[in-house]
Length: 257
Ligand SMILES: Cc1cc2nc3c(=O)[nH]c(=O)nc-3n(C[C@H](O)[C@H](O)[C@H](O)COP(=O)(O)O)c2cc1C
Image (tube, rainbow, N blue to C red; front, side):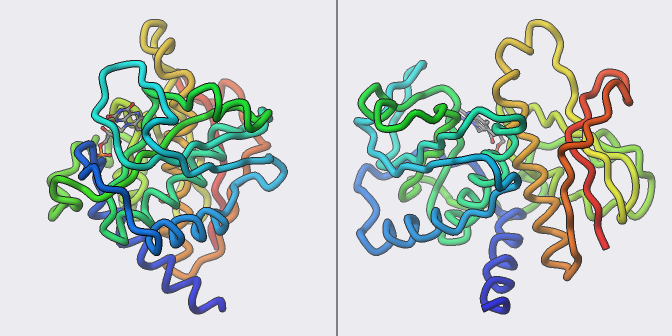
């Protein structure tokens, strides 16, 4: 059982280095067998914070309304959560597992912040609607071929660790809303302090909701990397250090051994 899980983890880890957002989909829905694999995987998502109630619904294009013109995908996963401290970080951590799973199965996906489930769907739960993930058969190349195709900040821009910081590469490649990459890492390979840049006043209006999701995504990439390398990883989110680093909010401490 444990071995099967580690093979699955390795596939998700490999997807980090090839995944990309897919925005062009074939209109035909995924077949029933694929959809049932997606549903099964939804049951297996690992929470960052076990005490937060979450729900994930697989819905169709007619169930969502877009805030901007959008060529719809054949399917969406709508993520809902209880509103507790760290709930958006938790959803980012959980739904990124699905993003990587879909990429590993050659299925296209994209985080969608600019759309929402319609009222009928919202009425099905009392939980807060957090974010959508679109999915379907890609109508463009589904993977990146080379790391150079990722538009990302350099390692030295997201960390002050000068050497031996290759373990940050998976977090560096994480997707984020408007590709703003708000993360910053200090420490070393045994203990990493994870920070989020505080956006300026204008950007904050847009990014306030999404930055915590971005941070959950990067935390999952970091966690998965150390897991695949055979390490024990603990992510502590209830020790938030206020004002420790100017311009940044402390999000978590990651302990690796
Ligand atoms: C929280 C979140 C919200 C996003 N919302 C949208 C969106 O509404 N529309 C869209 O086209 N892409 C959206 N994206 C995708 C990002 O633009 C994309 O991840 C980023 O540009 C990096 O590109 P990549 O995913 O291809 O590596 C979102 C990503 C995240 C993490």
